[in-house]
Image (cartoon, rainbow over all chains, first blue to last red):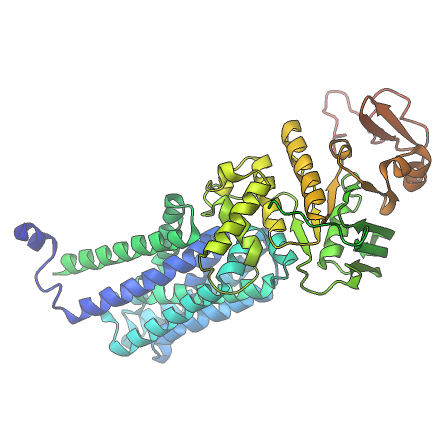
Length: 254
Length: 292
């Protein structure tokens, strides 16, 4: 049995400092993505979720150029992107996707430019890979604190908005009739989503952030008929996949 | 929900529309609409598609500002957030994977507008159970909302709207897409609730017939104008002809009422099942586009 475990888990996994950080950050980010993601799927905003990751890339790649912690780049760009999407002020599903697409198009162009500059600059050669695929083993202690703090912020936002958000996700008219400020609510939710997506960008990368946001949530919705339990299942699936990913990454490297 | 409230002092006006006119993108959708809805009364808002039924609801709910006129709820101008009105919107589509049971949707009717996460409590559970029983929904209380049939979902939505104890219940086309049996169930349920709770019910429909057994008053909409009163007062050839601005025939076929409004005065209605749209050229060998 121990022999088998040793085959699966390479020696040094549990004593490695970067692995500890990766496990903690991976779990926290998966948890936030799961909770936010359940509403993303319910509200049919998967496209916006994906777009915010790509918009974050613009900030992340730009941050490397000016030598700032990429987390700030990701968060700033995603939050600004969410703000612009919201400024278009369209409530209809199709119009909303249009606003998302326009912001996404603009941001991707700039991101491509930044990534090109990153790869040509001597100091930032690894940046492209880090931005697109994350660098979960290279997160320093100070960043961990920021990640945990931002995760809490996103979770508290969802907790406070929970009931009206659920109601407006089911039916906008029903929420409006009860005096729920649907527009403000949608904007705040988009901001929470921007934070959640930015956090998964620095761990698993912009390319895969959508997978962590949508995958566990969509799976969980099939497993239970209660929203709280759906979030718990999504978190479980997300954390388990993150940890498995960390293990496989470690094993494949050593 | 066994207790029943006595109707407030005779028949109180729970809702009054006074000279409501609404212009939407250069078109007058409602013109000088006046009617009132009283406690303990079941009122039908009848009109064809596009007659302005949903606009009236939006005005009453405060989602659409009228160009002129005013809305009084329980005798006062409606406040921005109105707990006196329960609302069941048209066409509520819920995906099968929405993680919500029928009872959760009803519970959202208590406090869905409040911030925070609801804490489970015995009182809350009893309230929801009572409401589910009142709409005969105990059988599917724990089913996913997305798996309910049209009639079942309609009853759950009614419970959702009623559990906040409103004085006025608005239902936008609740009978659309229901089969005849479900139609009758929903109508008799609403009639029962109206009488038991002494609330005012305003229900929109394009066909008045399913509502006839329960309807105390009717508001008939045509061309943005409204006529209101009892069915006998309103569904008459002279009243409806004036409303439509052209000759209208009211036919009584057993216990059904048919309103036949031709596209021009006295042209179509005496001919058999002639379509209401004007003549379209039909090219030989090509399908007519007249269906629009």
